[in-house]
Structure formats: C-alpha cells, structure tokens
Image 1: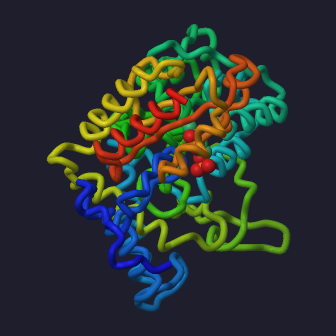
Image 2: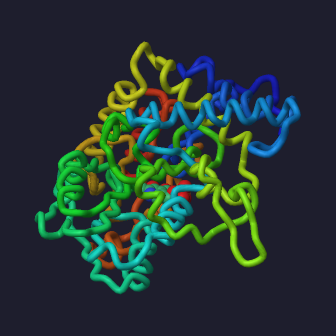
Length: 403
Ligand SMILES: Cc1ncc(COP(=O)(O)O)c(C=O)c1O
C-alpha cells in the first residue's frame, strides 16, 4: 500500500515520532489486544532478519553468538524490569500469555496442592486452564470476587496449599490487583503459590508488579510494544517441581534409548522446547528500553496514559445513555449503550477511522454468564494515542448518541 503525497501523516497530530508511520486519521484504540510497535522495535526486528538471522543456543558461528548474547540481555532486562532477582527467577519465552499459563499449569505436579483459586474477572486464558487443572489434579476450584478497587477478596483459609491464578489488570475495566503483595505473602505462609496473568499490566502498570515475589508471571510482549511473543518469569524453585512434559530440541544434556536428562545448567530451556522467535525476543529488549526512555509530552509513560485515560473517561461519562463499566479511569474503558448494539457502534466508529473492540473480550464467565451484560465496546489507549484522538473519539460517540 502506497500513500499519496497529499495524505496527512501524523507528525502534525502530536503523535510520538516513533509512530509517525501511522496515518493521522487512523485512530487505533485496541492496545489491549496488541500495541502498535514503535519504530525502534520495528528496526530491531528488521535488523535481526536482515543482518544476523540465526538461531540461538546451538551454534558457534558469529550470527548465532550475537543472538545468544542479545537473548540473554533480554532475559536479564525483563527480570530487572520486574524488580526481581536472577538468583531466584528465570525468564523463558513462549507464544503468548495463554500458552505461558498453560505451560506452567499443565506441568504442575499432583499431590502438593489442595485447591485452586481464581477470580470472577479472569480472561479465558486463566479461567479455562484453571478448570482443566482442577479436573486433572482432582482438587476444588474456587472463583472469588474482586472488590471495586480490583483487590482479590479472600479469606486466609482460601489460600491453604492453593494455586492462585489471577490477573493483575482486568482487560474489562482495568481494575488492578492492588493487594498483590499481601496476597503473595499470605499464600506463601499458607503453603501456596501465586501465578500472575500480567497481560494487561506490563505496558502501562508494571510498577504494580515490581518486587511482588509471585511464583510465576506470564505476559505477552505484543501488548507492551514488542514483537509477538509470550514471556514466563518463574521462580526456580517452582520450575524445579514441574513435570516437564512438553519436550524436544535444545533442552537436554543426554539421551539414552529410554530416557533423557534435562540441561541442568540451563533452566530457561525447560520451558523452551524447539527453536524460538529470536527476532521477537530481541525486540522485547528494545521495547523495554524504549518504555524506560520515552517521554510523550514530557511525561513518564504511566503519567501520560493516566492523563489521556482521565480525558477519555470524563468525555464518555457525559454521553447520555452510555453506561461505563469502569469505576475509575484506566488505559482500557468498557461501555455499552442503552440504544445501540456495541458491534454496530464499533462499525460506525470504524467508518470514522476509530478502531475499538466490541464483544465479550474472552471474559465470557463474568460478562455473559454472571453479569448478563450485552456485548460491550472497549476503548484501549496506548502511547501512540493523542489528546486529539481522544477528542475525536468523544465527538463521534456524542454524534452517534444524538442519533
Ligand atoms: C487479561 C488478559 N489475559 C490474557 C490474555 C491473553 O493474551 P494472549 O492472547 O496474548 O495470550 C489477554 C488478552 O487480551 C488479556 O487481556
């Protein structure tokens, strides 16, 4: 697709120069699904594919050696970004959050844990695997409520020898797991573990996780401005208990006719059977460095997101007939209209260049079964979003509301 010279590029719209490849009249508000990639991340991936396109962990030639050192730097940076220690944690790569959660839960041993705890507002990527896990381990599974501020509403007895699997940021209304540190401390005292779905946390709310000491943290790099990739940060002492059953290339030190030995000195390989997405892994290093240095409107990313979230929340709150699910502003805001179906609203908005999500966002249990909501419309902003984008979105929503 070639742009005509006369078409307006976004430089004049106040968009960060790293997104200047976006058209000014394309307003992408589906960051909760995947974020647009800033130019340094795109350049890093292109550079990998064009100048050192080799595998990692297997070869002695120079391209592979470069891959190895950049992949290791990425692992270190991720652990550091979460304020955790390399002494206790490893960082492995996989397909996405969904796969990471299944990889950990699917390999947990039986006979240790007594119950599984999750929450009502989980994405299907937590809700479904915890159902399967309860069936496999033959233990009780409890679905707890989240309070209005996003904390998990638990009793200490819920945590006894429990596997707790919860998100730290809801993909429905942005609620944050504000009691994460207490939850982790209480779980550990009760002989349990905590596995975190951080899919919606890493891009704009990662401070919540810093030093949280959860046993495993799973997230998607594609929701935090990097290439399409899953990440599992896991405590070494939990990894050692897993029944590693998804196996293949790159993870053994020896193979006999009827047995094999996992690489004892490379635990990251235990969750990485076969070749990995090396360009995407390396892009995550660039995405984190970018998040650590970018200053939209002179602000830290989290402050910028907070400012835009407030504008959007305020604007949407004033539209008659629009019900907002969020109790507070967030980078993701879900609404429904009393008059117009959400899928039709999404189609109308798209005609004005505004791209938002409609439906149940893979949270069928909470939205459809428990709360019986109609399909929702979700606006999720990112660092490519501008005040002008927000104003236009509110203006078009107001026009639709007036009919
Ligand atoms: C809270 C939450 N958890 C998990 C996921 C699953 O992420 P992925 O599809 O990248 O595996 C999503 C995706 O939207 C999500 O919002």
